Amino acid sequence: MNISTGALRLMLFLASFGLSLPSLQSQAPPITASADIMIQHGVAMKTRDGVTLYADIYRPESSQKFPVILMRTPYDKSVGWATAPAYKIAARGYVFIIQDVRGRYTSEGEWYPFRHEQDDGYDAVEWAASLAYSNGKVGMMGASYVGATQMLAAISAPPHLAGIAPNVTASNYHDNWTYQGGALEQWFDQNWTTQLARNTLDRLIDQKTDARVGAPTLPLANYPLFNFGQLPNDAQLTSSIAPYYLDWLSHPDYDDYWKQWSIEEHFSNITVPMLQVGGWYDIFSAGTLRNYMGVKAHGATEAARTQQHLLMQIGGHAGFGRRIGDVDFGAHALENPYIDVMLDWYDFLFKGVHNRVATDKPVKLFVMGVNEYRQEDDWPLPHAQAVKYFLHSRSKANSLRGNGSLSTSAPKSEPSDSYVYDPGNPVPTMGGPLCCAQERMEPGPRDQRSVENRDDVLVYSTEPLAQNLEVTGPVSATLFVKSSAVDTDFTGKLTDVAPDGFAMDVAEGILRMRYRDSREHASLMNPDQIYQITLDLWSTSNVFLRGHTLRLEISSSNFPRFDRNLNTGEDIKVARRFVSATNTILHDAPHPSVLVLPVIP
Image 1 (cartoon, rainbow, N blue to C red):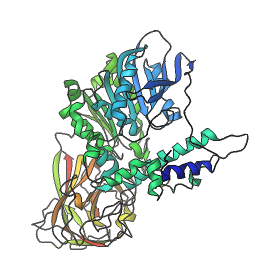
Image 2 (image 1 turned 90 degrees about the vertical axis):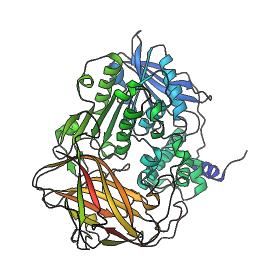
Image 3 (image 1 turned 135 degrees about the horizontal axis):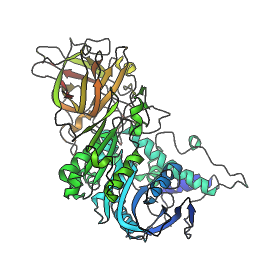
Image 4 (image 1 turned 30 degrees about the vertical axis):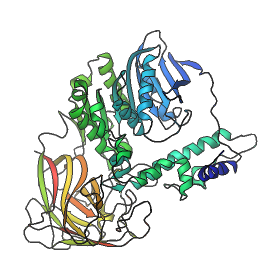
């Protein structure tokens, strides 16, 4: 038997604690009842290629047939977060099925993100529809990767899928999930992948722990295999437990590896109504909005195009509740919890209940600043007006101590602003759309003044506002830039500055210059050549209150949310050498760098 070096090391690691790789034992699933709810654990389903997936089923104790709500997860179907909604969903008159995806926990097969979810999702929907207590209508639910299992099932168009309700999930697993603007989403990619590898090891250890002989269950921090937030430095070992992570690094371009399971490439395959739920500070907020707009424009059926609903909340992966990061958004933030909204969605869709889904407008947004929900007819808001705020300075916009400003007046003759970006001393991440490990780096709106005090951050601010200004929609910055390097990054951040100086991050983005023209083909810069670029700062809905200030930050790093650009143009998988870059923003009549905001009259 041939065993890879990485797999052998993993086996040796487990053996050092008296463990081995376990084999799953097939047992007849028991049936229990609780308060008129029937529960069946470990129900087997065969995929088209013969792999067995296991699910738990919660259903009303009745001879009637009910619609099904299916959740397919890599995070363990038996833990509390997964089972918590089960009784509520079943008591509402649904069969609730939660299934471990391929290669995770009780299910057989190889775990590889995204690869099997189209076929397995199709098979799971059709299997659920065929159950004796199903009426043939199947919907799906869940957040994050559990949203991805819905979107990927939907593009495979199983005949009995009748609706989905993805919560805080992506539309493109290259540009929403692994990279953004060409930069690696380092904090998320390494944390998420490490978490999955770790809880796999937890499961192996827990299964072999024997209290009679005192075999240890190691806390996560003590695994010699990992440092928190990064995979093993040994590529062979990484390849045995997370081969997909190395594949992600090997495919920085948006190529066929990504396109095969990109939702954006397959909007025209989706046939079903869809409820999209997102959050302004969620790491996948752009994907939520793109899914809504893309299916509405390109869906395969009239139902897909006309029965799209969108709910944008505040935090998503950055947190739930009224307080996110440093900001308390008030009591209205607690409205519209996902489970309640999802159940209303399926009551309307599957049972014809005339509820708020039937009467409300299709788009519901939480508007920060005034901290309340508002209903709209569509997204982006058709009545939003693009207002330009031009960058100005006297060549010293560096830090809060500088002389950068924003105004609606176009520039004439002005000197440019420059700063030195040193990859050895990157601008640190301060809040924003982060996932995961909140105990180590808090996400959401945070005070940005510590970042804005750095000389490698350009700061442009308006005068205090004379009246409230609502910004709802996509935010961008068109910049004229140059660099001494062949490759570098430009980052942008919109902040809302209160009269007491608290600078709340509202929207942010990044662009790796080698991808300035195309996500598909990298192209290095000519040093000191001027380029016009557009920074996508994603979207928001925020009222800048009277007396507050609009502020734009420009820099070249946001680490460790994004990996550091080493400025050499080398492949990120192998690059080790770095150089400092002198980066410049021009803002004169021929080069009018500008922040573009969607202002609501």
